[in-house]
Image (cartoon, rainbow, N blue to C red; front, side):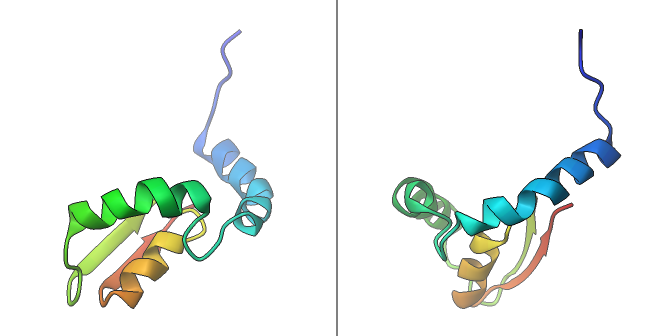
Length: 79
């Protein structure tokens, strides 16, 4: 049987999980992000100083904080 999902159910699920998720994150998002993902993302976006960036589906916002420290103006949104 296929599960039916709605935005309200997804938001409720994230709200219940968000604190636990954030407790595992470091300032770099965690080891796999620090070592594997972040270097590639930062290389792809290039210099961000003075740029306006939207971090949609930002989770707990670690990447938003990194980009802001690099000089970007960041708007971060999630449920």
